[in-house]
Image (tube, rainbow, N blue to C red; front, side):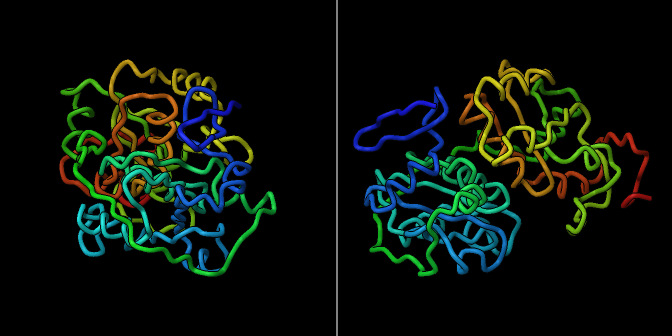
Length: 298
């Protein structure tokens, strides 16, 4: 680990990047008014039961996605969300959440789509913070309105169904990484145990390699060092020499891998947020199903 200094802020990060902050660093900077901490958790009520002091709550179900149509939050709504959280141009944002930072990584992806700079992820997320016995607060944080202005949208960070089909059919030369469990990838199940099945077919996109998101993290949930991550993806033929598309079930686990590949390794990566719930329901798209299932495990 090294300490990288940027302006008035010192980030303890993996060597070679400034996209992760440690739990030690964040606890030492809880009162830094140049920083805004944002929790993005998926479990209802977890923020209210106790959160990192000073953190605001972004609800993935309603704040970071369109509440009606299957889409990400609009630029207008996202800008207002950030302003309400007291985020201004130049604010450093630190994201964290439950479920191994899956949804916090989704948040980081949305920030990147709307070209917001100065965004970091708390390495290890909420689980690591709590496991280390660090402080929690039950009071909802309130801040004066910020003045951030979103000026752009980067479509190169987002893959659409037609992009994935083009790769599957060999019309585009890009790497595909399925980061779901081996059973989901093989077509033995459509969704993890206890999770609602939202697709009618099982299997994976032809040509996709399987690297479960958990392969990228250490026992405490923090990301493995960059050299280990690089070796992990090189072992399945992904070395950054061509663009990469990552997908999972609904786009949140793949955001975690997008962060590792894009932010830590610097590869050109798009997140397919439609993921298997879109692909597995689409008519006429090619599917590889080693398990031999067709409809919902039949």
